[in-house]
Every structure is written in C-alpha cells, then in structure tokens.
Length: 177
Image (cartoon, rainbow, N blue to C red; front, side, top):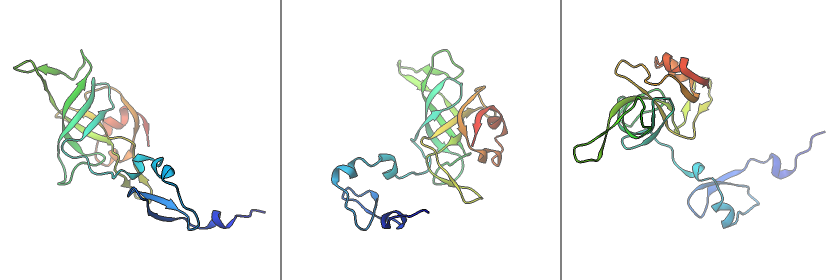
C-alpha cells in the first residue's frame, strides 16, 4: 500500500524570492537566503530569440569555434530552430575551411558566412504537446546553396529541421532528438 504524506501530494505553490527570481515554495516551508542563492542561474535566466550580437557555438567540423549573429534572415524578432542566420566568425582553428583573414591595419577581419540554428536555448513547442529546449545556442555553417561546409555535425539535432528542408544536416548528425 502506497501512502503519501501531506507535503508529498500537495502541489507546491510558485512565488517570488527575495532576489526577484521564481522559486517553488510549499505553503508551510520557508527557504533561507543561502538556499535561494544556490538556485540554478539558468532557471532564472530569460530565454529569448537569437538576435543580432548573439554569440553562437559552431557544432560542425568546419573549423570555426564561435560565431556572432549579424542578422536573422526570417522574422522580425530573431531566429529560432531551423532558421537561417548571417554570422561572423569570432574564433576559428588555424588551417581550417573557415578562414579569419588579416585586415588592413593588422587586425583580424572576420569572414561572413550563413548558418542554420540547430540548437536554441529558447523553448519550442511540438505538435504532440511536448517542448524542446537546449542548454546552448548552436549553428551549422552552410554555403550560399544551403549545403553544410563541414562533413560532420556533433551533438543532438532536433527533427524540426526536416520541416525546414535541412535534410543534409540531419543526415550528417550523430543523434536526432
């Protein structure tokens, strides 16, 4: 026979903490300030669209490590899963397919590429009622024809890319979520 105490079957109420973040409080319990400081920062952070200036992780073997979004090619607010973006390379491996050239006065000028958002921290609802959300924002670099520059894609890739006609990226992926 399964018995639950009063606190186990009662739904917790959601309230605001002293620091301004959301926390779960049961009616009869009070959390100390040290417990509130230990709450996960990512759960309090608001997730938004990928917009101009967002730093993105590159998850293919093109040679780029980090890129910055210059422009989202669809939508006014920004890009979501499967959307194309224009990016500028910020970090790259030397001797790779993606280049960082020397500028006029010795500074590094960044090359501009296209990319497809394959992981986004903002949650997206699915048809079956579930939601998909990732810990980071990541892209796969593509050329003007829409083909990936790299030959491998690392990490989980959502199957929503199939609806956006990015089948080549799905075929290169290790794990489809």
